[in-house]
Length: 285
Image (tube, rainbow, N blue to C red; front, side, top):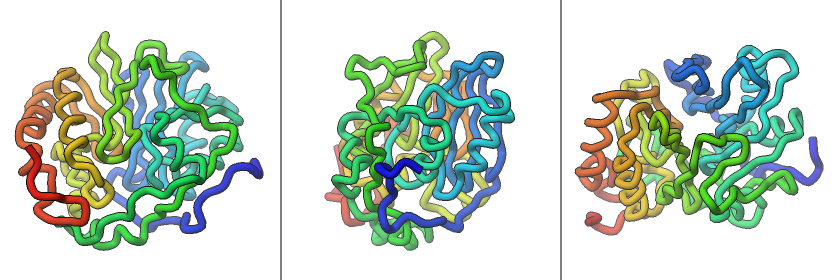
């Protein structure tokens, strides 16, 4: 493993799972979603070529599974051109050092996310006091310290382009984290939303376990800027995506997506924002 890369001292396996664990779904011919315990990673690119990327990097200790799934789809000894991060929370970078070391590939993230990925700054502490279910109560167990990707990490181009994803543009969707991005392909209105919104009620243990579909705001216990989170959801709703994949939950498309996202955008305060919690300052408008 590259000596210049390291996880925070609090990195560890998290024994959480869901009904989707280990399930891979071809959402589109060039968009494959795979669930690692409670979070999704995405392989973007046509399996008939070797030109593809990995979006996000799963839970801690999941590298072997992600490599195996990647080789099943793209062939033995294949490797993505890059890893694109929607953000740097532990469940989206959990296996990234092992993956970078195995594939020797670059990583791209928004400039505002770089301090959390270069060992310089920890994210705000998870909020176990937030209104919600048991997942919020155990959130202090989640790794929070910054990781360091060394020279493998790059700021994503500031012109909206994404390396090795020529049809996509990135959109700054802060709130859940300062440098959170979503990825959008205009020609068929495909959206990779990260945790800007999710399609499962992530603070509910029952919903996480069963993966019951419900368009929700970003996970409450790790969201520290609700005003920005609301603006980001409205920005994504205005794109009128036809299909969306998110960091948690299953893919949605068509009317179910459009109606659910419109409802969330129009009623964000009552649906997404908790009534109380460390980062909640009254209702947002």
